[in-house]
Image 1 (tube, rainbow, N blue to C red):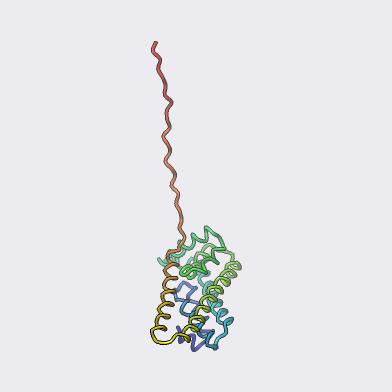
Image 2 (tube, rainbow, N blue to C red):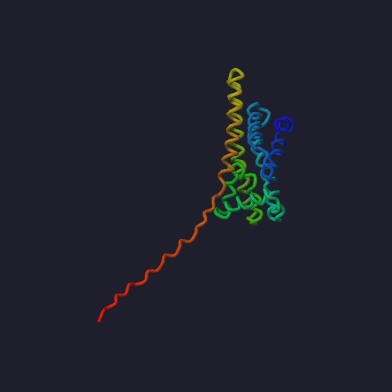
Length: 206
């Protein structure tokens, strides 16, 4: 991934971000962190890095939206599970859930499938996708810039190794939380009917 960004610059960021939103779980965190390093070193600007990542996410999301609208992947177990799982989020919160999903790991990769299957309005979907993708990209590019700055100030191999381990642990934690934050659908079971009490009748003796 780093070699793609090094050789192609902003175009490399764009190309790596397309599959991440087209149902191919490529870790966008690594791409964006390295883009932040590139911004810190001065051979990529912050607006272009964020714009390239956002454009890649938008293109990938539109591809996945089209696949969902045509029900092309419903026979694939992974895709069918994603449609059911993240479709519940859309059913519960409506179109606004697209923005929420764009800020959650794993959900951001698959949310376009159920959005297309449910034929959400394309213009709001694209707008919310762009906003959420830009916020996600800006956060991780800024984190990469901070990591690059800390890298220069840390002395010794041990300190830099701890920095790398910390960044990898952060990315792994985000992926794990994204898998656990799926929508929970509560199923209400009807309460058993209470037995009707029969009125007591008193018999009078003559």
